[in-house]
Image (tube, rainbow, N blue to C red; front, top):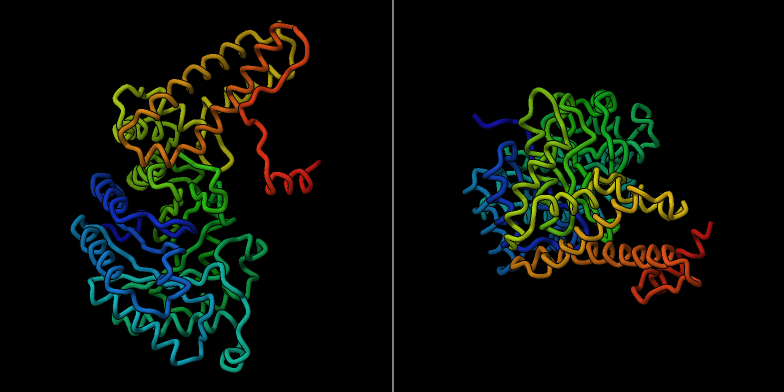
Length: 429
């Protein structure tokens, strides 16, 4: 029996959308895993999803979408198409309503049966014309969303509000007029997205969701940005689904992960979300990460890679604001080495040297991988880490030698350019 609980992947980030072959790989994974049943199409940089929402998809792009929808359905997964007209829609304009209907109908004609309308990251003020028709922003959103729901004639519709996290409500959910009006006005069968206390929520507490329920009059669907990195593409996250208790599932209507922009970085984040969804008794993110990593290794395209090296990679780039065990150990060791005399280094130096050997081995094997797309997804993060590690290694050699002044090697340990000049000025303290 199919679960009514929505769980899966939300391609909703800014930046280069995933390719068709990557999405098809995703569907293979999701079909293979327990606990995953939904994919939502919402890449911000699909022009026809957001900035050119009024325009119908050209034949070539429409053919790709049709293939995508059919492939998703063949894997017995739900496909949700999201449209984001909020940048410039005129809520009171019948022409814009007709554009919206034509676009939705185009997707229905190629097999799409589930939809979402998104009003995230948009100007929060009504135009002069709309102010004459609506007393509030929430009323404009509720009116057009309810109207679209009625047009869809029984098909499901999800909604992303402009205030989609606690931070945007100034952490006063009960007192937020926009959310209260939506709770009263939006049709009860329309699902509402929520990202938690923040846009990127390290933790989502059950109590905060219960408070939200009282305001929006339904269980929310979590748009989970735990592993998102579109706000800083120099970051990447390989760690498990964490910071949420199993009890959370009782208070939400679903969880969709909006993960890394780099497709191949998302095996562990998505795999462990599926594991979280089917778990009943207790949730151990660390154990889930270790199990998932042992599966992940087969996609690297190099049989010489070890599970230890894969777990090391994941531990260095774990989740937002958190490292895994190996990452914590190496940072602690470097801090100790840089702040204590050589005779006190002891095990900390051994930890650092071991890390350097394993990292160099990992880098060498990644360079020889047959999965070149995976290599290119990880290239920036892994090579910066290797450069900085080599820099510390040179400093350790100098410190142990006791000779002269340290001469910085040409490893580019200090980035240059306008961004770094800005950072020097702004964050000089």
